[in-house]
Image (cartoon, rainbow, N blue to C red; front, side):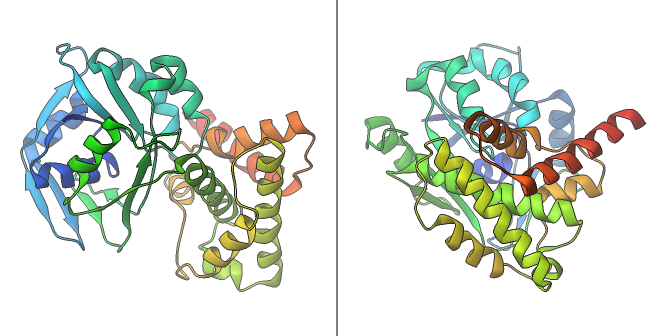
Length: 308
């Protein structure tokens, strides 16, 4: 399969790099600035699972109209519209988009742009960053990508994807209930990012306080209630399961959103907490903790824009 990775950042770059390392036909669709850095410093992964360096094939939007069988899409939500336009001329007529964004509302944008049949389901669990010279740094055991048809079927194209992913130095897992997996990840990431950003602390110190434990549990219960009201395919025990998961995280664990706030970067609050708040209002679900989280993040974003 001809694989196009939209962006060569910390997430797409990592998984695309592992496929390139295996020997798959991988091209990275990048901005001019990222292309210059990659040409200057090379493409490098520094990981607990093994380092990798290469000079991959790079494509800049508008350079040509070459077509690809699958596009791995792992941009921030606020970059999605531009990424869709960059990708549009490069997706083959029977090509498939495999999105790795957090949240769920991007699926509406993608299906509107490419059609239901051309969008699969996907998510990932990984802690990775770019250092100053553009190296992808990945220092935790988790490097998992989960994918599947949203219908749950095992189609020919999913079998081809499975063959492309098989044997790569990362944990690629095929799922026959990817929709549920995506909603469960959405619940976890929204609660984790919300609670750590609200209290401006890693999860450990928050958990040590009885009030912190209650806040975590309350936010999980609120989000679960919203998803149930919206008819999301979540399990009956998901709030309890994720509460246990959060209590099992490392003491110093921070969410990526919290790190974004700490460095004054944009956040995905509208895509994560904001979309759930919209659903809560539509279905009449009371969500005071979620409201508080979203208010804090919105005020941060307004202050950041004002500083510019």
